[in-house]
Image (tube, rainbow, N blue to C red; front, side, top):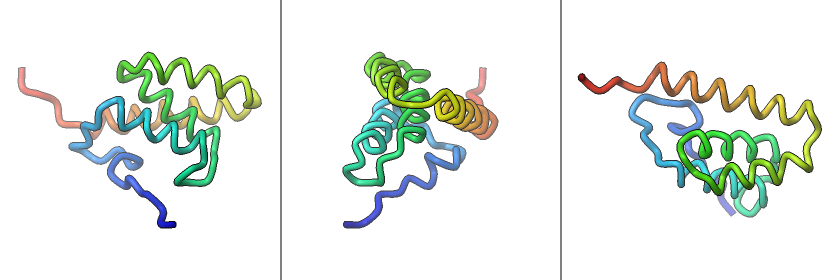
Length: 97
C-alpha cells in the first residue's frame, strides 16, 4: 500500500486553501491508522485545525481522542496545530480590501 502524502498542506504552502473537510479527513486517517500509521498526536493536530476552520465534528473527535492521550501528547499536538496555523496565516496571500 502506498503512502498518501499532502506536502502542500503539511508545509502550509501559500495557496493551500483546503476546506475543513480535508483537515478532518487527515485527522480520521491518523486516528484510525487505515492509510497511514496511527498517530494520535497528528490526528489531534488535524482535528484541531479542522475545528478552527469550522468543523464541529472535528472538535468532537479531537476531544474523544484526547481522552486517550497524555497531557504531554495533547500539548505537543496543540503546539503543532498552532505552528501550522501561524505558518499558514503568514504564507496565505491576503485578499485585497
